[in-house]
Length: 287
Image (tube, rainbow, N blue to C red; front, side, top):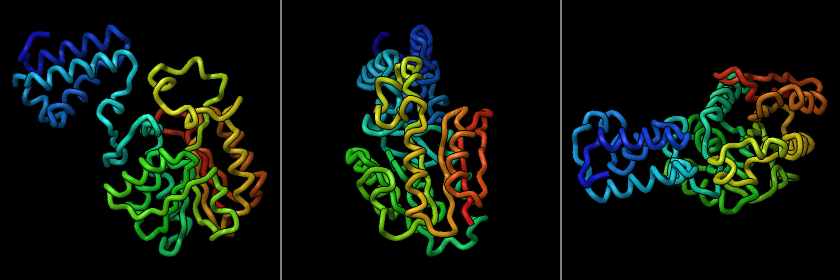
């Protein structure tokens, strides 16, 4: 690329280069918008603007890095979730759009199942970057929200996000539900645990396999190890009337719902598909 190229020329080069390397051609818009501090609308209305030399160099390096598999979010340092900007790095799973559906489904069920949210306690287990806990707290501010993770580095990211977005959350370090054993009972438990089967490791894209933290991806041989452990512990931490919501992998709905039904026979368990038609959530309403 020549010096002082225009925005449209930079985007054209990036689109072609990324396509040749098997990446999303539109990533160039995200990266250039980041380095020019422009949203997409502003970027596309300035197609004939010349790039400052430093922005051009950074943009080219970023496009080449993404072509090699580095996620866009690790280059920019953030991802949007539920309309809010969250810090991300290699210590946390990059937020996925499907998790927005878990949050949206949980909010609706919390309102329906409990009515009034004041006085209720929610725990987000394996919080990662804190997207679930922070979003729920901001959408339902009367809830008391805990967020736990076994990774102290992940908790550090989650705490920064909560602080930046002014979400009052209590963060606790520990393995799954262990921090809540013998303490105050929980009304709501949400979790997006690792659920990819070990047998699927080789089929993952390099962007996921080499850049998301391994501990946030794999759930044992069949992908269900963490659900088993969570469900085994739930009876010791839940109030009599409670709500549980899990994100799951495609095809795991029946097995995860069976775990919940076997543990809470009188509960209402529902498997919910995402916008793409894949099994993505399981909710358990305990009365």
